[in-house]
Amino acid sequence: MEEESSTQVSAKEPRNIQPTANSQRPAHQSHVRRGPTTQSINFVPTITESTAEEIESEFEINENDAQEKVEAALFVAGRYLTLQELLVLTDINPITLKSILYNLEKKYSQGALRVIRRKESYKMDIAEKHHYLINKLATGSSEFTKAEKETLAIIAYKQPVKQSVVIKIRGNKSYDHIKKFRNLGLVQAKREGHTLILNLSEEFYEYFNVSKKKSVEQ
Image (cartoon, rainbow, N blue to C red; front, side):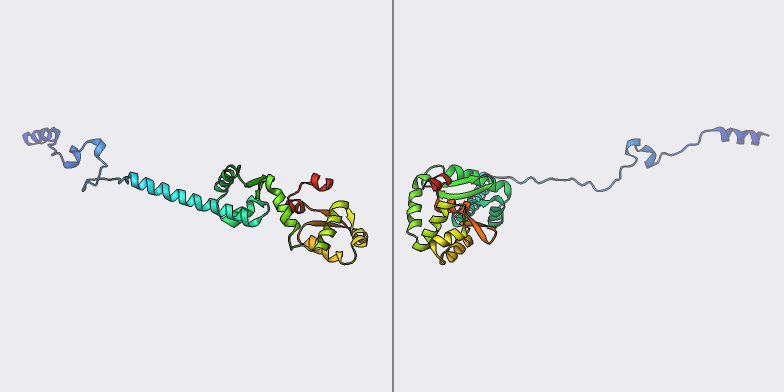
């Protein structure tokens, strides 16, 4: 009996459990892995004044190169170039190209040269007060013979005019003249019956630097 009582008492006594490493760890650290500590260091490059000047200088060089490309394209073309044509020729992104064209308009707002905008097209030309020089050069140009100039003058004076009328006035050689003018884009032709109706094109006025009004008056 005494043995049974002794056994029951010992069963009710709390077990003396030794704390383990896990049981001593705070709950919020239960999932923290222990190991060699690593520290992440972000290296921020330092831009010195000389570095900033080099970057700015490089940017200015690239911008100047791009502007020179656009100037060269306008100068060589001698006609209106659309934005799309300039993009293809210069390989400059559209935003930069528009900025350059705006700057060129300002740059050439005075002096002998001008950058002229017509809708979304641009052209480099001389100032209007110097147009008389171009007209003199065009008149004396060997690009057109005297006979061709006379044929072109008839078309300009009588437009719209039938080709048959021009042939009657200028003779059969004017067939070749008219063909040349059409190939150059100076004259437009629209078929009417067995003949053509001839008119001056926009290129004619740009080529000779005259306005439509002046051409009609002359």
